[in-house]
Image (cartoon, rainbow, N blue to C red; front, side):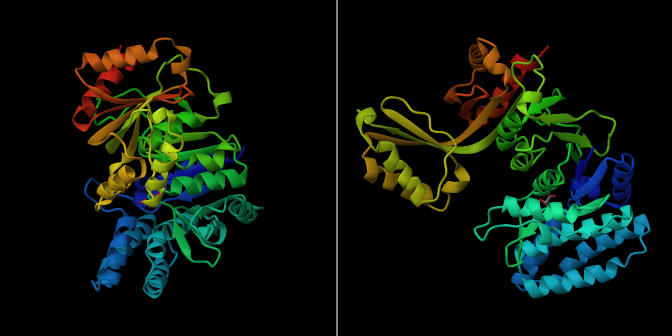
Length: 439
Ligand code: ASP
């Protein structure tokens, strides 16, 4: 059996945690390949090393004191090396990184050094070879992952190794220039290594004991989700359940490799299994989980006989394309159509220009904009098996006095998306949780 383990930033935050990680890895001979993040926060208002590196880059670019900014990174790694008693000359590696950062002056390169250093130290501690993601994870020039080449290169690098430590978060363009994934991207790196290794299990070690049925900042002590399918995970993580990077399932899904979320600080806890739907044991629950995000904008269009106007949607979409704006949902009626868009894509005057162009392109009778909408995703394969799920959902929301602004139910019946005013968001989450998870 081959297990690939990825450890997140909190699991790598200091020397004691490096040791804890080594103990977990050494505790199971199947844990062969390890992917690590950069050291995260040790306490509430501490800094993540990645953020310190971004600060150092800003100092470099804007004429600030780069060396003193880099010293904060240096101190973290020197501290870790000292705490674990490494004989390895971390100072020399740090000097080299500092020189390279100054020479490259590249944001992604600078940020990647956190994972690079973390993996070098972990490899020393585990006495395992270090594999640099720069040599193995490949991006196309346009920034997409070159999955085929990456799997082949990682597979080759792992070949014949009993164990190895791979740096997370970054890879390189064909010319060797470093590119990082988006924040939290070491989860994706872990999934890539799991796929390339032909792993039986991808263990993702973090600081929580799995996915919770809803946001614990809104509902006290919500139920843990013991298992969920790849599709449910995708829906929940896309909508804000941020235990795992939303893109991490793609590399493992095709190969049917299950993901297990585990807690580094409570390894005995069961965690959450993310499984292909065929292996998924139906839990009997109607709803698996609830997630949501605030700050959406709705652009609502109304035009009589819209249904008969060939090319109407096409013309609106061309305007969105012109502004490079993607939309999340497009609920429509016979003569109405709405676009739900992440508000952050509409700043800097884009919203006004976009609306003016839509008016010009399709001459709607009405165009209205609703700001500050929150979307709530109610997710679960069980919803299609249970008649009356939406009736329960909307009765619960109505009983809490919230006005529903938008509804979108995917044809897969895996999720129902509900749009409410942002100020009603928490109340809605509580009402829905109570209805489906309350005793
Ligand atoms: N260190 C990176 C971040 O803070 C990537 C990761 O931890 O996954 O986003």
